[in-house]
Length: 230
Image: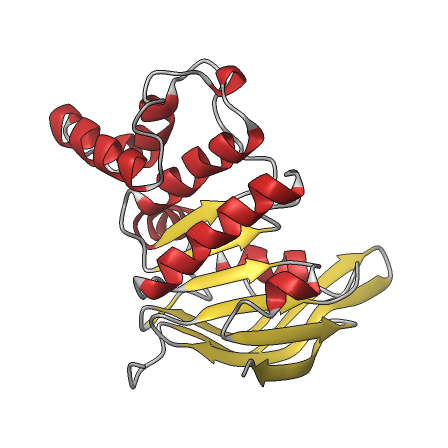
């Protein structure tokens, strides 16, 4: 484990103002994530998991406190700077896959590289390599509608990995899958963990949480528990 965390939240509060009502969706959240850690964020509906993931993913900013990503304080970055951090430092894996239906497997995986300005030849090489790594070597030119749910999620994982991000953020990545496909995706996460990828996953499933190194439980916008798994 590295001495300096690659993710550090320091007394982060997120407040929403609705007319005369203010709501702390997150209150005084502090934790660090080191390189190679596999973190599960858990808690009941409305506890602040989505708000926390949005802040970790540079999709929103804290109202108070600091968020350091790769040693840089991104708490007050403008929209352009946050967008650059999302593209270069983060990989996103969604419950609903979020694939572009008109594009084939390789083209979907290449999307982040296109926005990073990677030349076409290099982009295709990287996308092909990562597709094969996640078991899609025989599906490179299939459209999402020609793939199973598990295969679509593999495309999503490959797309998240292709720019070699500092952190992978996963939001209920097996939520739309049957148990067999879900088990295959979780096995792939275990492989990524073995490769020392840093993973932060939101999940409601306690069995998935137990596969991680550490569980952070939220309740009412606060950290209720931060425990390491045996």
